[in-house]
Image 1 (cartoon, rainbow, N blue to C red):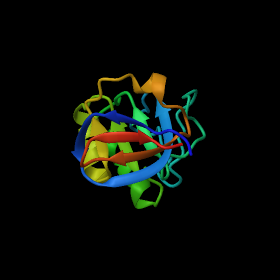
Image 2 (tube, helix red, strand yellow; image 1 turned 90 degrees about the vertical axis):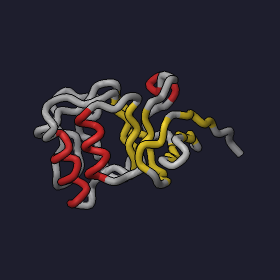
Image 3 (cartoon, helix red, strand yellow; image 1 turned 135 degrees about the vertical axis):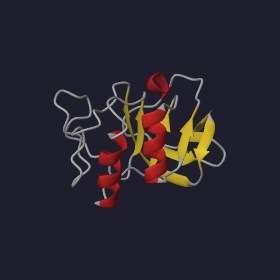
Image 4 (cartoon, one colour; image 1 turned 180 degrees about the horizontal axis):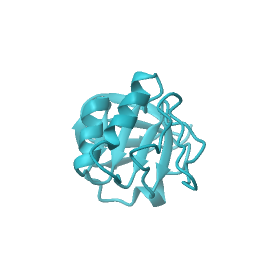
Length: 137
């Protein structure tokens, strides 16, 4: 049986979800960065380009663009292609609004450098009630 690691932050939206990590220090453009019908990142030259946010634990180091940033993530969720949970080391106005409209577990205010700990595809369990990120695989 493998070893798990737990990273603690602050739970901002409750609930528990599991999914593969989709992680990037580089945030995604709000307007047009995600295909709303497939959840696929379509921003040219983005490290996640071609990958779908569907059922993932989306970990980004913030957002860019206007508060319309949340619109594309919400539209993807309505199409059945949204993330299972969100992790933002720090919240800003765009990430907070996105979390609210998606209504998925959210952990934020994380002191550790997630980008040096979590790898793309790691299986994560996000507990938005306790504020924990558990690397389970």
